[in-house]
Length: 211
Image (tube, one colour):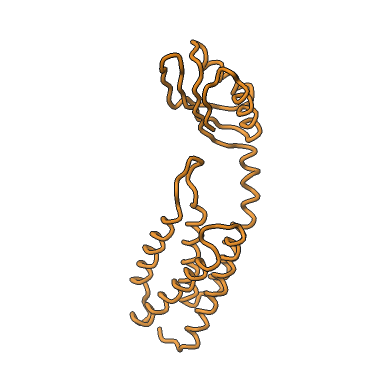
């Protein structure tokens, strides 16, 4: 495939524009990969694709595979695990999708790239409002509890969970002296979780409660 410099520069310009739109949305939400990062990812992927088309006379599969590999490492760099769970997965997925959009632009697939960019913006901007609705219906959490030992202490907490409409599964339990250490995986609505947390914080027999 042979094309002139005007075509190449136009594709780079489109990559800058679309990458900036996606990056602006991420920047607005103060994410680690924001305006500059995602614009550069889109432009870089587009340029690599253009170079591969020139070097391989229209077959960009070899360099395209290396772009995907490189973006995988870049995406992995924004994923981290904390006490609250795994963070950065959405940002990593956005990087991956933005690179794919840049590659599509580099190949001249303007309509496909624009439609995909629109889908990405819809998912990032609108789907975030659906997550609280889903959490209100169903949420899975793991609680670690340390309490004073009593023969029926587990049954007490399981009955409390059942009264709130929560389902639980025992993951780990151990008796250490006069204390009982145990972990529960609990499923249910957010409001029910909140009531259970409030009850545990007020329970004087609970020595330590991680939620």
